[in-house]
Image (cartoon, rainbow, N blue to C red):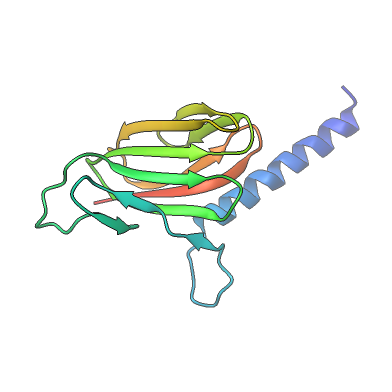
Length: 144
């Protein structure tokens, strides 16, 4: 492999990684410069509420569900540690949907849906990405 090409490729990959980390880890502000967010539908069998879980007085039933449609704005959602989660992704392309941090994935194709089911045991912010395209499509925050 050409050494010059290798340098350029490594620099491009490093810049892409830094940009992804900057977007994922920067705090949102009220100045309007943050990445646009969309409402993530989170539902339980007993109630529907955007981006939040049922109040503490309501016993959780069933998993918290997040639906992401790739190609639009970055979807964001929050869930408490210990909850079961189902992430469904629709995309107009064939790729692998990857939930970073938990290292879970499922394949998606046009007209088909990817589904990732897991128990939210690790707190933090985790990217949902179309892996081959390095395209951030969602961020899941797991908190106490």
